[in-house]
Length: 383
Image 1 (tube, helix red, strand yellow):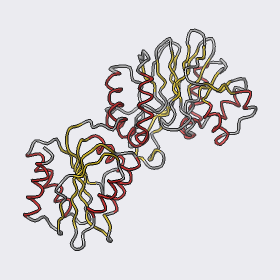
Image 2 (tube, rainbow, N blue to C red; image 1 turned 135 degrees about the vertical axis):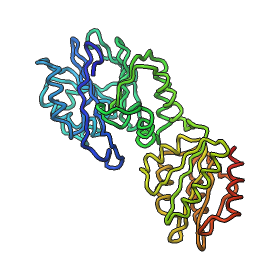
Image 3 (cartoon, rainbow, N blue to C red; image 1 turned 135 degrees about the horizontal axis):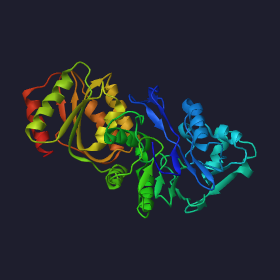
């Protein structure tokens, strides 16, 4: 991957990983991005996950071609970006580590670095580091998405090294559209921290950025306004699509049949609609879809006197990721003592600015003519 004459990519693809952070399916792998700036002084921008440490060290040595490393810039201490810190410190004993004050406080929890106090340069907001013709400006980005995070702006070539911001799932060697996996990455990894992301976007708006270099996913160097606008939408909890997500959890198929009927009604009424079965789809994808659409209808049966477990899991994830500013319809199914609507509404009530759409609908095992009429009314209230 070519960046510039002086700035090189030394990261690694991981095509063997099945679950990122041991929970998110990554069918096309993940990239651990790292960069090197070769100038009068040499700066390495972050390391990689332990799964690819040896490959990264080989990439580093190849680009250095016998040179020494003067600085390791530590943007983020999460292990997928910091696993080789101790190794590079041992290989280059005169190298300085550059990091935020919070990162310095956290670093000993991860790695024991000999003579650390004499090796660290602790930087604060708008501090700069000259490498020769290249200069790095440090911008603090706490809680995007860890408290020690900072990003770096390279003044000569106008590159924003954005840490986990603007990242995506998927190895660089795979070819796929950016949007869906970037959305899924953001809303599941960073999505809880919309406020701090908004703060970072405001800081970035004052910079003349020609390229964004994240710690996961491709470099962004065309139509940057498109990506920044999406991040503004996601981090301010707005919707991308003026439409409807129907999310169904069905034990025996009757609830899903009702969801399909509702979907057909929505399409007949020219509502941009997507139907997902949350008992079978990846819940991280379901979370991303929920944030994508303006409105949502949830369908779930009562199970063991509670809501069906997949729906509970889905709502828990939405709550953890700060789902808000949406209108939600509720449809329950119960052969006796239906409780799902009451319990789904209780879960939603803990989320910010959620409007529960009327009518709430109760199905008694299979869809009745009266239920169909109620669904028509529900769709009319979404138009």
